[in-house]
Structure formats: C-alpha cells, structure tokens
Image (tube, rainbow, N blue to C red; front, top):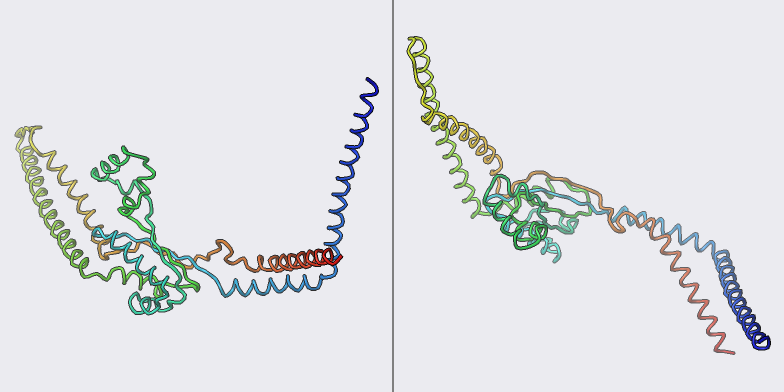
Length: 327
C-alpha cells in the first residue's frame, strides 16, 4: 500500500509545482507588459499630452460649430385633417432628406433651409381626451379593446391619428424663432383651398346654431317670465295657483341650461377653428445633448490617445514578429 501511494504523492507535487510555475509566469508577463506600458508612456509623454490637448481644442470647436437644437410645435388638426397633416409633414421631411433647399425656401418659406435638418410628427397619446364625453368614441375604443391588447390599440397608428393633439418636432443647427420656422411651417400646413372651404361652411353652421340657440333661450325666458308673472299675480290677489308636476316646466329649465352650456362650447369652437391646423404651443431651441452632441471635447482627447496606444501596440507586435522570422 505504501509503495502505491508514494508515486501518487510525487505526481501531485509535480502538478502543484507546474501550476505554481504557470501562475508565476503569468504574473511575470503582466508585470513586464505593465512596465513596458509605463516606459511607453514615459517615452511618449509629450506626444500623448499634445494629442490630449489637440483633442480638447478640436472637440471644443466641433461642439461650438455643430450644435443641434430640438424644436416642438403642438397642433390640433381641425375638420378631420389628420391624414392631410401627416402627409404634409412627410413631404417636408422628404425634401429635407433630398436637400431640396429651393422647395423649403420657396414653397414652405424656411429661409435658412440649410440649418433645417429634419422634421417629424407624432400623436400625443391621450385616450381620455379622445373619449371625452363622446359615447361613439368610447364604444369604438371598447370594441377594439375586446379583440386585443388595449395599449397596442391606443398606440396604433390608425387610432392615434384621431387624437386631439399632435407634436411636430424638428431639428435646427442654429437657434431659431417663430418667424423663421414656426410661422412658415404653419402657413404651409394651412394653405389648402379645399379645407378652407370646409372651414368656412363649418364656421357658418356654428354661427347659425348659436343664433338659433339664442332665439330658443329668449323664448324659454319669455315662458319663464310669463309663468313668474302669473304666479306673482295670483299671490297678490290671494288666489291659489296649483302647479302640476306633470307640466314640462322642469324640462324647459333643463333645456335652457343645456343650451347655455352648448353656447359656451360653440364659442370656444369658434376660437379654435380659426385655423385648419391650429397651433396650441411652441417650444424652441432646446439644446440637443443626446449621443455625442456637445460632448466631443470630452470624447476626442481619449479617442486620440487610444488610437496612439493602439498604433504603438501594433508597431511593437510587428517588430516582435519580424524579429522571430529573421532568426
């Protein structure tokens, strides 16, 4: 038994010795490479410092000259013009991609077209405003939700186009203002003879409805005043007047209140329907810091130094391989 165990112990000692040598060799290689790296930095310290400073300077001027600004216009498409609105924005964006500055200047009206780098439109998801007090919209959403995921339906392109508000966003490389971009874009979107005719008829119909409602309210006031005079006269002459709950007086008062609310809605409608595409608000010149925008003065110094180190590594590797082949 003792003779068999002795070779096993010797084998284990040999294995441990080999593992120890491999570990020490590994750490020795790391130490050598680290030392060579330190020597490389020491030999090229001036070059590395120059590249770092050069990266800062170039990055600073790049950040200063290549600024990007996000701009947003929130709009409401009136008279069922959602598809029209989206097609117009797609047209502008296609001309931007084609670098058709003549179209942007002469047709859209953006004078500084070269600084205008892109435009898109997205719906502002607001299912509650979409449903509002409209039972038709509620039943529409309810019906769609029965057949699938409500979130997907709410975000669906076909559904979202019918939301009240939409966000037009565009990018410029220089600060802009309403006169340079917002007004030209909105004027271009509102330039439709067909929808101008629809707008005219729509507004006329609302005005007619307002006049008719005012006439009805006046008639209701006359009925109520007549009833009030009759009641006061009966009280003065000590005569009894019996009020029949089955009369339509309560319904008349209710109708008057509904008409007054409707008049308020119509007057607000007239304020919002003065444009085919109505602007709600505009936010301009939001500095874009996404990605590498505005960060080149931090990126370039390290990029230059990294490339220099990479070049030094490959040069050293090439010399070592060349020396091996010449032996």
